Image (cartoon, rainbow, N blue to C red; front, side, top):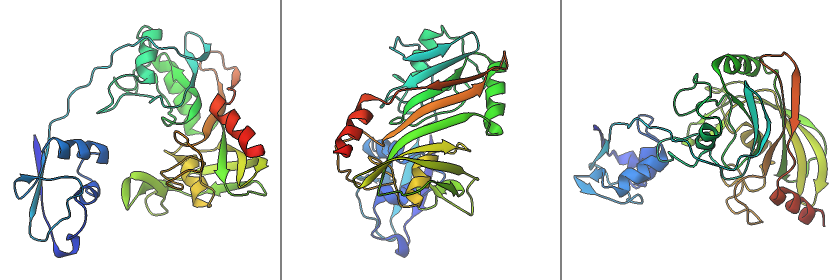
Amino acid sequence: MTVFSYRISDKDAGIRLDRFLSEKPELPSRSYLQRLIGEGQVLVDRRPVKSNYRLQAGKEITVSVPEPKELSVEAEPMDLDILYEDEDVLVVNKPKGLVVHPAAGHEEHTLVNGLLYHCKGRLSGINGVLRPGIVHRIDRDTTGLLLVCKNDAAHASIAGQLSVHSITRRYHAIVHGSLSSDGTVDAPIGRNPNDRMKMAVNPKNGKRAVTHYHVLEPLKNFTYVECRLETGRTHQIRVHMASVRHPLLGDTVYGPARPPFPLDGQTLHAKVLGFVHPRTGEYLEFDAPLPDYFEKLLVRLRR
């Protein structure tokens, strides 16, 4: 158990407990902090409090963080939409709501659990026990194509292609507002200095990120676009489109808190994926059809 202590200063008085703690880089994620608060592991002057507790100057906060447990990832039978598979790689069409790999607080029912069952454990080990075979990721609520490596040689080859930006990755999205022309966002992305749960355009501490967008179809109050990634930063398309005032429809993190339609997360689909096969040297490209919810939404917005 590791214990962190904080004395509340006058300038921090009145701030919510959960907000104050979320800004401490030495502490775990905000969702995990909420769990610790609920379990009574966060005390103010030795008394448990709720997340919305307002800080008072002079009082002391103690946060007890249990030692991390070594997670073991179990294989789970899962209905996977596999577009291509051979002895080296696998291309899967990920549905909305499926997390790619396990993490603390989410140890099962992920894509990795299903892949371990399907591949009988034969996946690359470069990214460790929690991310076998995973060389790139897409968000839980983003649908579409993901490339999985079944051995370390394939993993090294694909990682190399990613590092020089030679892999083709084209996403389809619906964004707020009217875009009349194509464009490029070339802006570094890093952690949001005001909210460590988010990413942001961060010229000081961010890494170079480039997104090219192409208008596919104007819609009433929205635009249907294709985004091509030149780099692959966390939440890149979501952050970049929000930075030019065209956030993704359904993205309550970087866009409006209340979407105009009942949606489960952002309307973003990894539609096209192309790469050089690590063994044969042949260029392969795959195209995943839009999911039903996306197609129905387009029909609605065209009326």
